[in-house]
Image (tube, rainbow, N blue to C red; front, side):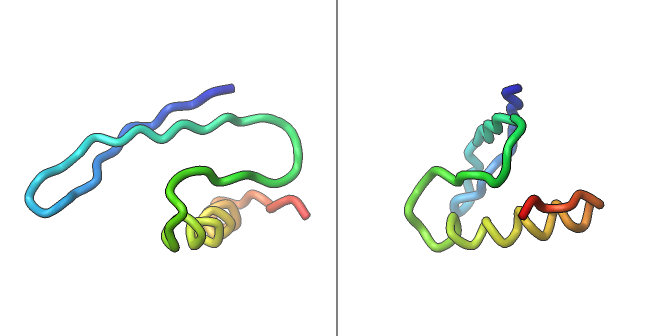
Length: 60
């Protein structure tokens, strides 16, 4: 199932609308795509923490 969430990113004094698309399917793990930046690499830890804090168990 494809889910889209809209948000905004602030660059200086301007805000840009961003779209986050997530495909929810059965299976183990997840893949992050996007810019090869440290923020993208660190978001893996944020995803794991968000899943744990909402009561979901992260698959092994």
